[in-house]
Amino acid sequence: MTAPVTAPVTGLSGAADAEGALRTLRRGLRLSPEFTAGLPVTLVLALLATAGRVVVPVAVQQTIDRGLGGDDGPDLAFVRLMVLACAGAVLLTAVCAYAMNVRLYRTSETGLTSLRVRAFRHVHDLSMLTQSGERRGALVSRVTGDVDQISQFMQYGGLMMIMATGQLVVATVLMAVYSWPLALLVWAAFVPLGFALRRFQRIISAAYTRVRERMGDLLAAVSESVVGAAVIRAYGAQERTARRVDAAVDGHKTAQTRAQATVALTFPTSELVAAVATAAVVVAGTLLGIGGHLSAGKLVAFLFLVTLFVSPMQTATEVLNDAQNAIAGWRRVLGVLDTEPDVADPGERGRTLPRGPIEVRFEDVGFAYPGGPPVLHDVNAVIAPRSRIAVVGETGSGKTTFAKLLTRLMDPVSGRILVDGVPLDEIRFSSLRERIVMVPQDGFLFDDALGANLRYGRPEASDDDVRRAVADLGLAGWLDGLPRGLDTPVGQRGESLSAGERQLVALVRAYLADPDLLVLDEATSAVDPATEIRIQRALERLTRGRTALSIAHRLSTAEAADEVIVFAAGRIVQRGPHAELAAVPGVYADLYASWTAQREL
Ligand SMILES: Nc1ncnc2c1ncn2[C@@H]1O[C@H](COP(=O)(O)OP(=O)(O)OP(=O)(O)O)[C@@H](O)[C@H]1O
Image (cartoon, rainbow, N blue to C red; front, side, top):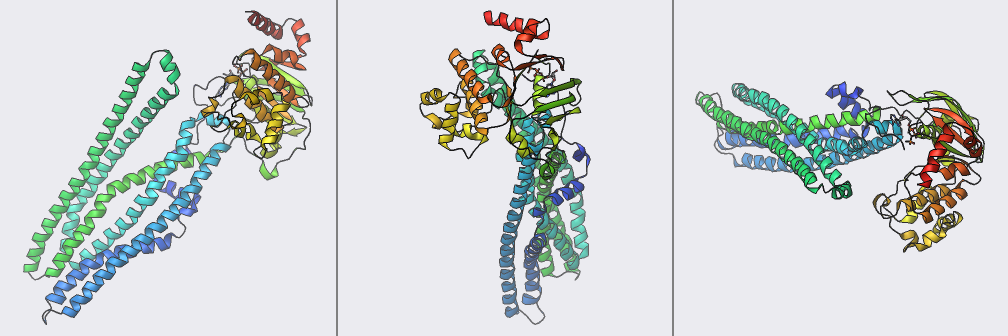
């Protein structure tokens, strides 16, 4: 078994972390041009919707000053005109706001979908090495959670930002046109609020970071307690586990309450400032009016404008938070996309291998996991077509690493590997994956019917093809014994099947995929004798006529192989048929002796 990774061996690109918010936004938008497609029209609609809002204060001012208080007495025709203008403006605002919303949703959903797809594909392209370095959960959260944060901003925050900025600018300009001393007064009242809100926003952002951290703890505690339920029960640790989950729930609640309390503080503060500004405008405006510098209509319109000025300030905190989260999310998604796949598919430029038995050649191959010491040294080996090879060695001697290099899950640090004389990294992935199949120790089963799991490597295979494959491997008796045959549900990760049955599924899968080179990582889990015989028979038939390399944990596999390759401390130290190797003193004879002793226990 491969040693567990205790420290991240490699991280995803951190370059994106250092870059500024604007640069991230620019790069993000360049990468997903769908977000900005048709943006000018959306902006025009936003502008129209905003402009519609200021028509009402202007119309009110005109109605009071010209329609009612004009020099020639009330002018009802003018008042009617103003009322119509107001109605038209309200209608225009509604229609434009609707059209703008729809457009924004459409473009942002298209952009997000393609971003999600791109990030997901890229995660798949990253080698197993990068994936194990970065926690897999974190990768999933980049494709889901982080993209969702971008989505929230693009659909709500972005819109509010456009509208709020427009509203702020138009209200400011109009206020200055009506009375610049009053406009200065309003700004004087709001400048400190702007600073206060910025400060609040920083506190809120920090508080929500804490909420997210506590949420991570909570998810980890809950999922561990569910996944590890059997172990928890077996050791009677329910109480301890419940306490840990309770503490995590409590921690999340406290963080969330604190964050909400800070958010709650922003609204009354801006309400207060708005009230102070309004009062100041009323007093100063009345004085200006008495002095003949301001008409009643302008004063009333001014009060409307103060309201228009306040609401963008209030939403600013929220929007800034969204924007910050979105940029952080974008940065993390870009971090994934920036990570070069270290095992690259040569694609179109690559070569396709013709079908037929495969010859493998390792030439001076060396390998080290990133940041770690060399684990394979000067590995030279030729594996003849159709030969069945057992790879044996102490735990940690490099067997799995050797197999992963052969299947190109990673590339060697030095030397090269040739398949039928072609360097492995020049072969197209499609051809490589068709011809070389690795059967892992515990092949992953998807929560689906048995049939669907069996045909995983060849989805177009019919039920008859699958049954024939099962029969070819001598497993018809097993399939017939299952109550629902191919329709048997296997449960999550195949938990409705026994460990031995899961191995059988992996073998049928590989047989259906029909590769020319099989790399088998033999399971170590013990199975009952009847299943053991089934597995042995299936393996014998599966490997017949193909080049097959098995990481052998069972003595019988080594005995049955044409040749045994023995690894010790990352080197091939012995090679030959079992009988020959067992007869001379050495690593293999020692392994064989301990196997035999174990069998006799
Ligand atoms: N992902 C990894 N990151 C860092 N080091 C690793 C990683 N996987 C394996 N190693 C190290 O590489 C060496 C060879 O490991 P490998 O898994 O190839 O051994 P093995 O012979 O297959 O062992 P086992 O029989 O236990 O599966 C070990 O020292 C191991 O600790």
